[in-house]
Image (cartoon, rainbow, N blue to C red):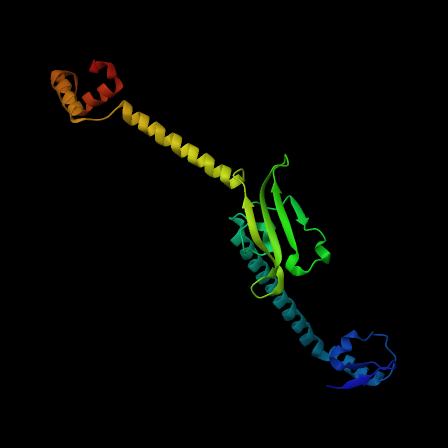
Length: 224
């Protein structure tokens, strides 16, 4: 690869020839013109193909990065904030974006081992239901690290907690209703015997036992 020295003393390689203005009239103009002519004669097609391939690879890389980012976010989307998660994913949990951020007093002046940040989630009326505290120091390795969630407080009024309570209440109500139905009517062998006796006593009025049973189901007063 050839090196040329421009009048201002700047070295450049021929691979950088595309950065030279087309109206350049300085040193080594003849050599540069030869390279321009060469490019115009056909090498430009190869270069264009190179640019297209480069652009395609960059687009594929960006798509892969976007997919990896979506997968990362999906890992947190179904969970409330939890200890150990990276602080830069704090807005991607089940609770969504935090309502308020509070850095500790003199945050920027403190050593990393003493810094912490509180992320707080609130309802529209200002009532808070979750606080996650992020720290920036690995106490085991004794070194500064990217922010991570060190502790989490989730109140009983948190959205998922309320949903769980609601589901539990529905389940308990359903079980109580089933229990009441079971208390009101319990099938016994005597019932079967009564069905059979009713059918035998009124056999002329029904085609078979099933018709008699259906009639008794629809007309419970006939049991009296």
